[in-house]
Length: 77
Image 1 (spheres, one colour):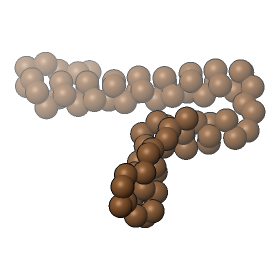
Image 2 (cartoon, rainbow, N blue to C red; image 1 turned 180 degrees about the vertical axis):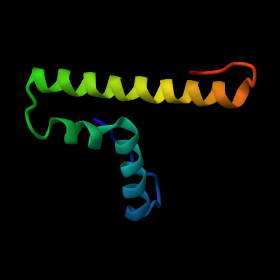
Image 3 (spheres, rainbow, N blue to C red; image 1 turned 180 degrees about the horizontal axis):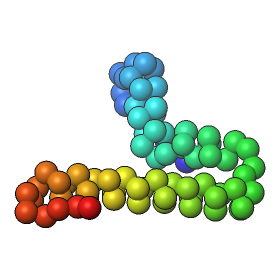
């Protein structure tokens, strides 16, 4: 659990800002959103597979556009 110690003569506003930064850096809001509702393992697996497909498609598109722009002698049919 993230924590901060109040410095001498530090206002509460600055302490709250520091605490928010520490909590955000630790990734607590993201983790809370992730665990807010139960997600069955099958749904997790489907989500992971779909994101992997999207990543591969983006990579493929990026490589093809690089080949078209980068090397004029290579032709893609």
